[in-house]
Length: 487
Ligand code: CS2
Image (cartoon, rainbow, N blue to C red; front, top):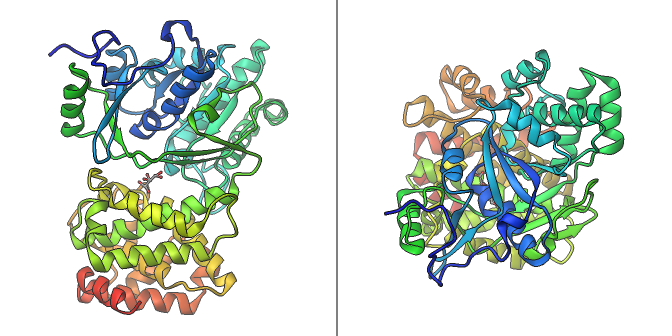
């Protein structure tokens, strides 16, 4: 079968980009070439180009493996997006022009960041890619890529923050205007966090540069949402069947998609609202809703589900007891929220339950379980503190916290790897814990992890310990059944 690389000879059933790719210039540099970006930002941009034109095609930058980069470049940036529902629909996305592997071609990366045509630098690097110091919220100078960049001449930055500062420094030196740095990751006030880290990094090197960035560049916050499982052999086989060629960059996703964006762009932006994006002045309510109702529930079901033997999210929804806990978690999370403009939280919960149950999506619980030390604070602990403040129920947050601890214990017993940037620390503090209480104390004591107000909250600790004891002594299955029976 020929390799997929052009829009010619595509079956009529496959939607194509609605614009002339060659006529549209590049205006976005995107750091982090994962499946999520290809199912989200690249699709909104494809729609914006079709509806309103402009030079907004994307140069993608990969910081780690070069696989996705080679796959895309061998296909002129084209790839198939499979949308999984009762029927699987296929669409070819044309918004990515090319891709660069930063470790092997730093000059090309800096040239792209400094190019006057580049007006937006967007990023999807997951929570751990930002180099946030969990204790201060500032830059973590102990993160190897950050430390290396701070000590270097920035000719080959390894971190996203380093790349953004290097690009802005070169633009300032060359008299080119700033770009907008656009965070598209699951962090509360993600753009504002990015701004803080970029200014922290720049100020450590050049105070004038930091002042220039603060005065000229913009860092809007965004809420991003689309469940995007990893590419599998089935993804590739279905894409081949749909486009009639060998597409190695195909990805799959769900029909639902949401993007709420703080409309603060210092050098213009694509008409993303033509693709359904919502432009607002304040994203915080939407972000909080997303982080605690979707991502928080994901973390709870991922730890309980993975330890109980459920491979995919849809399987946790087919488990009647766990489904009750999932519904409860969303309801509990919703009680911690203030009103979200235009959103009925009950309808939102119903829609989330349907998305999680989508029988055509193989979203691994083990994938969601990754990076717990980066996810639990914003998804579970912040919500717990909000519930305590509001005097609402925290049982589900206690269950989620205990489930994460049971997941860590399972890794100590060798069942699987934890997959967490603080894995070594977790294993060393937890390995010697001889009882559920000792394990809880050791994990609660992890520096910069559990907020102090929660660490010292005896009632919450007790409710976590009660559940952890059942999980470790009777097993996760028994814990899920007992918890569901008590609702
Ligand atoms: C998931 C998210 O892996 C995870 O942590 O909770 O990737 C989630 O699927 C997306 O945020 C959905 O928009």
